[in-house]
Picture 1 (tube, rainbow over the protein chains, first blue to last red):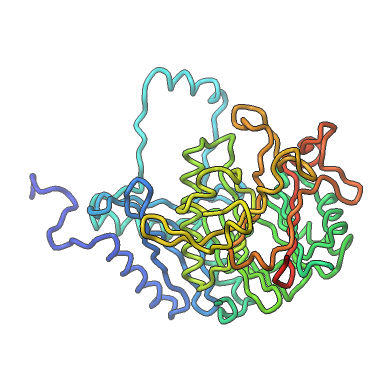
Picture 2: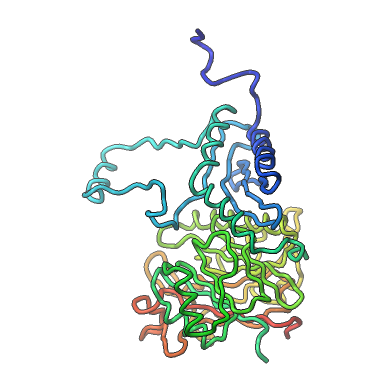
Length: 167
Length: 274
């Protein structure tokens, strides 16, 4: 059993986040019989990081919806983080889970914060391709993403094609 | 001459202002009513509009109506949603034989987000706009909403920002170059409504706390791609409609009985407006 080889690292698995997203796009097209695809919009943040924004596209109607984005350094594929779409305007009864403040939290929190700093864990950061694949699968299965994709497809029954959108 | 199309936009501040919305729709004879931060279901508002204003009102097809409730009474305008961004909603807007894209947006609010966060958010919006332009192959964008920015905020008028100019003639040049890249000009007519030397209120929202250093702010805006200028007629801030006053005794938005924002009404014409 290996003691010194870093866990989760494989020299045969060197896919970049962009390549993994391309695989995801192909899988979407196959699984939906080309009705749905992913559009990968590449951009750069003001502080010089690479951003890829992932949009779902309903091909027959050309309607699109933003799902989430990923961010990494310009010349380094890893670490990479996923920024999911927020459910900020959804009432709590329509969220599968949400956090609720305990009684007295408002009073206790500032005191606790004065006493010590806290470690914030970003569950969406990946250091390796395998980790990124796992989290990518997870983000595609978030309620907010599934609902957005469902609405994109179901609402499209009444919408005409894209021929009239182009200039 | 009546406008070819009239749009009313109102941030209703999470209040049930259905009666006022109906009065607004009736008195302005608007084709399109767009509500932001509405907590009343769109079907309830639609029923009220159909009953009290016109049976022609309908809900255009949407992907998500979390942020914006959109009502239309003129099916030739279309208004169906073709892109749902993080905080934007893009809709087809067919005026005569022209297809424009109406982008509804809602910026981060001043109370909970500092200048840096709101500026960074606008950069996200600009990325959304770039995507819409490229994916739909149409750059005739009309941006409408509660920007939570003033027309003079840097990101509103810098080349890499919205590039939105103060006057029609500024935007008439169509593009400007910055660091070797060309950027399309936009026109922001809200500049013309700022301050107390104008007809109507000095802005759309009022706040003198440390988040509102100017007192009045022009948070609710319409911004147009330069190619749309010939089709733009006018924009106004509304303080009352059909017996409902949206203004308190000091002439500011009546946050108690109405909303902390005034509605705005935008008119479009058939083109080549002088």
